Image (cartoon, rainbow, N blue to C red):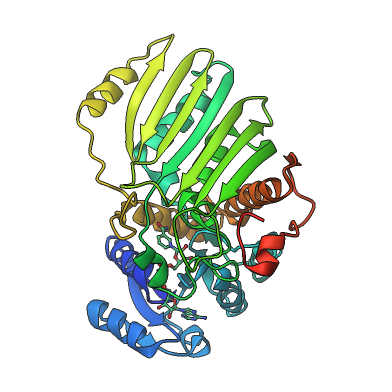
Amino acid sequence: MPIGFGVVGCGMIAGFHAKAIADIRGARLVAGVDTVPAAADRLAKQTGCRPYYDLKKMLADEDVDVVVIGTPSGAHMEPAVAAARAGKHVIVEKPLEITLRRCDRIIDECDKAGVTLSAVFPSRFHGPSIEIKRAIDGGRFGRLTVGDAIVKWYRTQEYYDSGAWRGTWKLDGGGALMNQAIHSVDLLTWLMGPVAEIRAQTAMLAHKRIEVEDVAIATLQFENGALGIIEASTAVYPGYLKRIEIHGTAGSAIMEEEDIIKWDFAKRRKRDAAIHAQMARQVSGGGGAADPAAIGHHGHTRQFKDVLAAIRKGTRAMIDGPEGRRSVEIILGIYKAAETGRTVKLPLASDPVLKARKTGVAGL
Ligand SMILES: NC(=O)c1ccc[n+]([C@@H]2O[C@H](COP(=O)([O-])OP(=O)(O)OC[C@H]3O[C@@H](n4cnc5c(N)ncnc54)[C@H](O)[C@@H]3O)[C@@H](O)[C@H]2O)c1
């Protein structure tokens, strides 16, 4: 019997979920549920899955083994908890949720129900990310000194106007950081290790009718002593490929979108030739730099395969709940540092109280 998937939220990202599932032998998209019936019907028509308009009914479908949550970011917790309680394995789109309390609730309920939980960060499954991670774990960088994540993207006003939840504290949970740059924040902490201290500034400079930041700059100190920056924006025309830059006393690597563009080490290894050859034929498209739909689905495919392997073996998914929570904590720390003008130390004891979240105005 193939493993059955059901998606919650049949919007933009659900189309990528459907493609990722279609690429996995032994998996099939069984159902899709949306509070807007036309959205569920559209996915059903495109994929042949069963449309549902009521989550409870989809969760009662015995053919659904794994539930993928693709609702607006601040509406991940309720369906994730309901799915866990129905005994389904749970995959949640990024961010896991928009507060630590809501992330923890998902993690606790999945643990309690004994189901597998994974937070979606496809970039960790891309070859170049894995290559850099291996080089770090193998000590090739020497002492890590600098780690940067740079996401200078562009989103039109029409993008924010395309969904009432976009650009709101309540459902987007933040702006350029919480929605767009979170993939890079996740990669940076995966590669460089935990963040210890944050200083930051945020601003909303180029959009109307949004409550959240469209520019954010943070300086970081990692627990290992290295320093770094996070730059995130949806207000940089025309939008450039995102970059991760990792530097140490014995090596440097720079990744642009899914291409390694610098790979320089004091001590060469045989494997470097293949990476240099790969560098000569860069393959990345525009990524999400200017168009949110210009992303591939292969990272999702690899991540869903990892989740299925974890279910089969009874192990945790590579990006389990606590791993998915890490980027949310860093971003909330950045918001707190920007709002107070003070250094914020991680780990946070609890969710920071953000005035902007209460008033709905960024950059207070
Ligand atoms: N991994 C990635 O690269 C990636 C890319 C885009 C979006 N996302 C994430 O996916 C999520 C959805 O983003 P999107 O761009 O697809 O949004 P979208 O607005 O296109 O789709 C969301 C859908 O959820 C439905 N919905 C809302 N509340 C619901 C509920 N309670 N139950 C069932 N359906 C509900 C809406 O009607 C809509 O059809 C967000 O969390 C976003 O951060 C991830």
